[in-house]
Amino acid sequence: MNTSNLLAGITKSCGCLDKENRAKFAKLNFKDLTGKRFGMLTVLRQSNGVKKGAGATWFCKCDCGNYTDVASTKLIQGTTQSCGCRLKKAREKWKSIYKDEKIQEKVKHTFRQNDGREKGTKLSILKLAIGDKLKANNASGVTGVSYSKRDKRWRSYITVKHVRYNLGYFKDKESAIQARK
Image 1 (tube, rainbow, N blue to C red):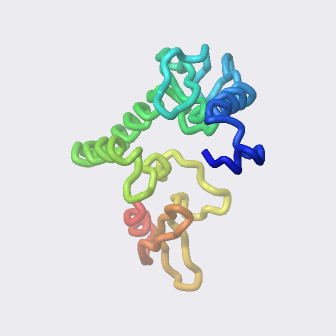
Image 2: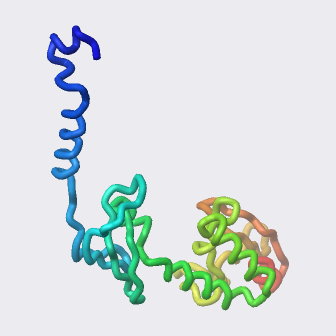
């Protein structure tokens, strides 16, 4: 402790006042989330347990019936919206889309290891054209396939992270559709 800071009024205590001020500030900024909904979670009460570095934690009930403890910041920022059942449903959807067991295992491994990401891209945002709603100006009937008047050929492409990747130009529409799948 510096004597000149103490005499000038800059330092007012040994540090215990700072702890008290932080506790008062935390109480002023405390938000009661009881009864509020965040995605599929409904906050029931403040949790008894404390997750290290998480601040206040809340005991929540998911729409599926499970219970879980979630940090305030995760609820408010929207990073946690279910007990984990939403991820399980996404996995089941991918299993039904990808019948091949090797691909299923790769998807399962990727979800576990990389939070559902493959080379920085969330697999859940990649959807097959099956069942997707087509845009009004789509003339081919398939997402990612269009006719180029200039080249007089069918073009196939895929867009990932707002970047369009050209899959090639084809003489007939069926070949372009096959390349897109």
